[in-house]
Image 1 (tube, rainbow, N blue to C red):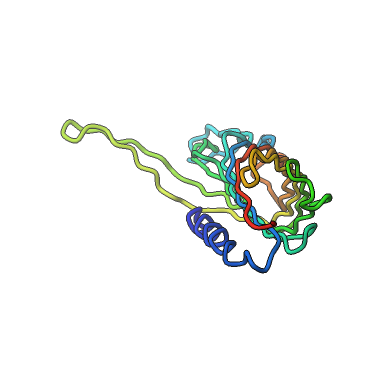
Image 2: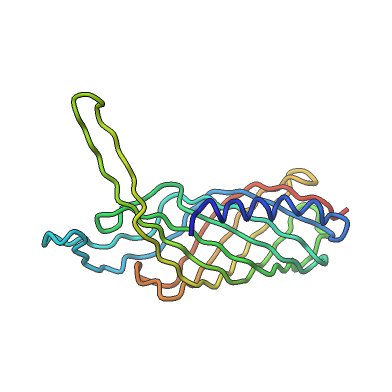
Amino acid sequence: MKLTVHVIALIGFAAAMPLAHAQVPQGNIYFGVGTATDSSSNQQIDTFGTGSPYTTPKLGGLFLDAGGGLMVTPHWGVGADLSWRTTQAAYAGLQYRPLFYDLNGIWQPIGQSAKRIVPEIQGGIGGVHLSYYYNSSYCDQFAGCSTSSEYLEGSSHFQVHMSAAVRLYATPHLFFRPAVDVHWVNNFFQFGSGWVPEYSLGVGYSFGGE
């Protein structure tokens, strides 16, 4: 499953939100940066059959996060979220890149009556996709050096997603969004635990709700 497919789907989801303005109290879209972490599985993998195995790494690095929601009532709504590592990272002699995606129910405990501080709780299901690449370099006297990245294969896993966030409004529409997410990933054998916490800080925009 390609990263671009999920990004396009999320953009389409966000683009459809204004069309529902007349039917729903409020819509929100956001974009942020953060990190997701997991321990190493401490597996020893002899990727190339050389007799020199690699130890599997920890999950970490800089992640981007994008999502949005539609509040069907002042307290309840639905949303979607994507998060992915900004660059490839080393994994047992290869390179990998993770992508988390989910669909969620949203609960706003105090509704939209609070104009400046709006907490939200999300819970839902989705998936995780790990893409693996082999990077190689080649040099000659005529063209110089070049590097290529070849996609090899991917691994997909079911996940359950939970998050707590708060929208801090700088204006009636523009907000900042610190969030803590927790992903429970089924059979996440590539890393040391099925529990993957994620921390992010985003900026977003709300429409409707007046």
